[in-house]
View 1 (cartoon, helix red, strand yellow):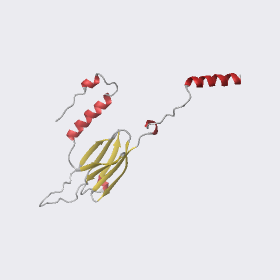
View 2 (spheres, one colour):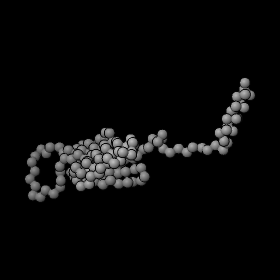
View 3 (cartoon, helix red, strand yellow):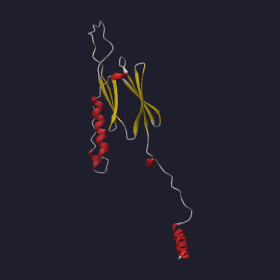
View 4 (tube, helix red, strand yellow):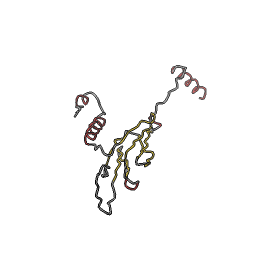
Length: 158
């Protein structure tokens, strides 16, 4: 088990305390995360992701997907069986589960599909326009020339 001590970074980094707490929470969550049901996280392209969960025996009505505060929660709860079943061999896991995924800022769920026992959750990172890089045009005349031009223009008007 690895633990990280971020205290030396607090001395020289200002305003990153929320990042350290997210890292700490992520490592604690990963250690306590159940291994059932099995899942894959796939990078589709630069800003698209897919989570695929193997949910054999679950009906669409028994699965609940929710996002809140950058946490994606997938819950599966089987309906109560009307009659008791007697297995000679019980190899298919049919237990309830709750799985949480920490999402980065601006990552949103676009859709979810349950096909052949596989739940596919599509995610996309949508960076707001204000946060995207912008190119700044460089003017060729110097600022002192512009000031002179502005002074001449104001004297002509007066």
